[in-house]
Image (cartoon, each protein chain N blue to C red):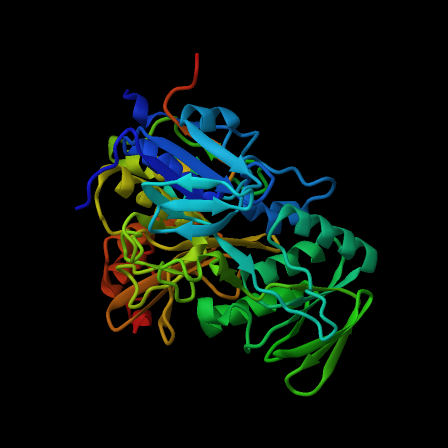
Length: 414
Length: 71
């Protein structure tokens, strides 16, 4: 148990998106009365980022960004929001955050919520290919799609597939190039990977799977992708969705332990007293997972950020065990998933059928219940979500499936 | 009814993400082709107050509010 902070104390939150703002709110919720300064690297007021690859990509006209926090709420919570101020250094001995404006902000506790940057793919000629992470990226992508009418997406993860689906709806011809055999393989496994592959094929997306990109040459209007099998793919425009890297360069040498992110315990504490982390940048222990993992999901950033804020305000070191969750919109289908599928998990179709638009499947193994994934049917998720939160077993999950659908053959559960 | 069980939804802000439906399906619904989520009830059970607070936090559009609005 550490001491709770006092009224005179300062907390600096590095990052003004989902995790950072939730941490600031959590501090006030936990009764912290001192000063809270939130640094935002972008010049935009904090905004709803998920919509960039969802509604706004599908939409037309000037993208309208929804504010993540009203100015009034930021004022009510007495949060000093410094936009365009990026942290460039952390001094753990004198307890300062140093910004790109040369400020040295003192802290008694600091929350690292600086997020992640889209992983970059660079052409042989040295051009960093476009990604989708900010409103500026979105504008560029929409303009390019309209101009070229033909776009190649590198990466068949959530962002890559949402870009493919969103641009297809605008009549853009899309090719998706990906290294594994099926899209989203590592997140949803082969059965659902095939369902998602079929969905994209049905809507005219060309999928080039098992096709790792070895290099890209050329320039805007005429790129050549060189693929692992020696073949090539020509395209006027490339957008890259191959994951994100935690924004930790500014922390190198600071004394904070880094390993594919800022390492934290399940409470969100780093190895340095008073230094906490949440959101995409944090690689944290989690009671549901066997090793620390970066959980790069929006609601996880919110819940973990708040949790860290509460811990700091209350002087506690409570573990965070929130169930990881993501959702994705593709071709009018809404996917939701709670928990995390492990490699080799058994799959059980609890509702609907994989050959239709609506289904709900469970993942688990050796008596453990790991995850639920639904296409549509979001009203059925609550029970499984609760079960995951309380560490329910595979049998509990199957019981719930049978209770909500009595005609489901018990034998089908194997 | 206690203030903390009251739920409000700003249908202008709502972007139909549907996260609220997965948390509280008895309170929120997303009818097919609707432009926004709808409230099935204006109050949650006292046992579900924590879930309501999570739904408020989890809304990327910040369209859900707990407690009665300004009168």
